[in-house]
Image (cartoon, rainbow, N blue to C red; front, side, top):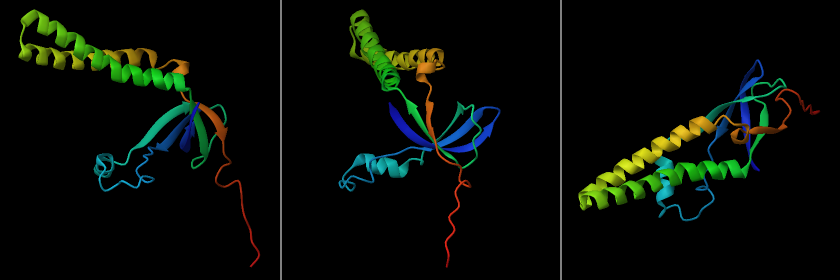
Length: 154
C-alpha cells in the first residue's frame, strides 16, 4: 500500500477536504547542476493537490491524516495513461502507412492515434475512476493541533 500524509483543510457533512504536497527527489540528489528534471521542477509550479475524501469521524482544519492507496490500482492507472496513447500511436501509424504508403501519412496517423489514445484513456478513467479500489482510504488520524499542550516551568 502506498502511503501519504495529508493536512485537513475543511470537514463538513462527512466530507474532508485535504491538501497534499507533491514530493520530488531532487532535494536528495547530488547531481542537481547537470540534471534536466531539477531544472524543470524549478521552473514549474509547486504542485499541491487538493482532494476530497469521505470521513465518518469529524476532523479539524490543520489535522494530519495518513492516506493509503493500493499499488495495483496505481499501477493499473499508470498502465492505462501511458500505454493506451502509445498503443494508439503505433496501430494508427501502421494502418496509415499500409493504406497510403507514405511517411507523411504515417506521421499523421501516429499523431491521430496518440491523441485518440489519450481520449480513450480519459474516457476509461472517468468510467472506472469512481470505483472503490481506485479511491484512497484513511489509515491513521493524528491528534488535532490543539489537543496537546506543552507547558514548561521557567
